[in-house]
Image (cartoon, rainbow, N blue to C red; front, side, top):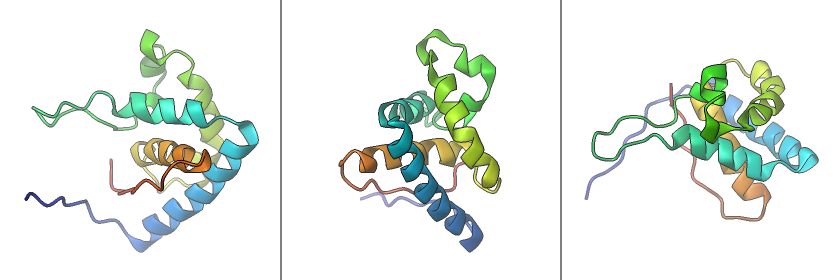
Length: 121
C-alpha cells in the first residue's frame, strides 16, 4: 500500500484554514452559491493527469486568461465572491483556498465531511 504524504504547513496556516472555512460557510449559505464554488474547485483541479502526475489545482483560476476559457464561463463570478475573504487571509494559497471552497460547498449542502489537506502552492 502506498502511503500519502502531504506538505507540512504552519500552525498559522492551519488557523487561517479554519477561519476561511467559517467565512466560506457564511458566504455560501448567504449567497446560495454552493454549486458555483464546487464547479470552481472542480475546474481548478480538472487538469490533473494521473499518468504524468502533472496539472491539478494551482490557483490559476484567479487569472483572467484562465477565467476566459469557454469551459470556465461564469467562474469569474465565484472568484469575485471569494476575493473579499481571500484578501483577509493572504497566507492561504489560491490553490488551497479554491479547493477549500469546494469542500465547504459539499458540507454546507448536507454532503459528507470531505478531508482537506492544505499545502498547495
